[in-house]
Length: 154
Image 1 (cartoon, one colour):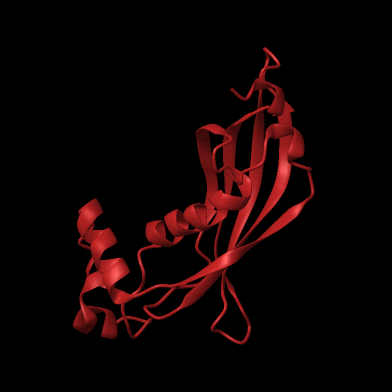
Image 2 (cartoon, rainbow, N blue to C red):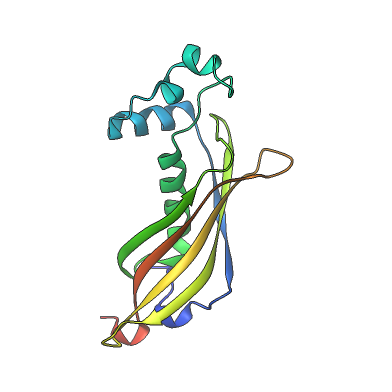
């Protein structure tokens, strides 16, 4: 277990997640298949080649899901009760097959539950494309979790 307990989160702290991931065509295809998303912009090279993007885009929900997965070891691995919400999701730039992403999480809020036994933590998660010289932001969202307090661990 490597996640943080409620008491260990500091509002304003930015956690740079070490793990990165290069997204493959296979990753995108499998995610679309599992979620039954048959949007041709994700799957049909000829169709996507005739759009403003000139190639297939990685499914935005995959990018977001991957960002959550990358962030778990340093934030909530073994210390979470539940994910409560994902809010204000934005995809300002596209992600393509072969792009490598990195993730950072900034703690924006925390408060104890009404019974004082757990805590609610909100993090602003940002996803960047590292193989682009400008390292643009490609996805961002707020993730709110119900976290264990150190005193409540079993």
